[in-house]
Image (cartoon, rainbow, N blue to C red):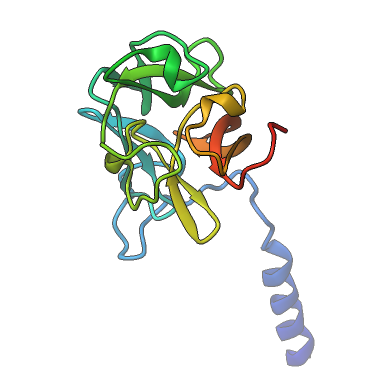
Length: 185
């Protein structure tokens, strides 16, 4: 009889445990403290865009070019739209931003040059490039140079090609000069 009563108690205890899909435990970081932010949340720290990491802490993402601003974690251009660096004039370059008219797309806008390296030159950081944007192209990183057609590229071994990248959390394609010669795709 005791065994039956014990089995009945065990059965009741296990039967009372139900999943509670509405329960949301208070999130904590690996060290047990509350997170500073929620993953993929965005903010500005001066002209620096920041994104919340999976661990719940802010990570610096991009320094907005000098003549742009940071709003809601996204660099906002102040210059006119451009399709190539030539359309921006002396001392200016064409750079990539989240499109203010369509927050799920990328677009190119004129900025004051950031660095000294021209498009397709090797780079290790955005600050080295005239456009303020260093592209990862496989094992090689090169400076971004906006283009519409092959003639917008300065080197004979370059072509104008759509490159896909992520800027302030938005993925999209923009045309850039890239090494490799050939004609415009």
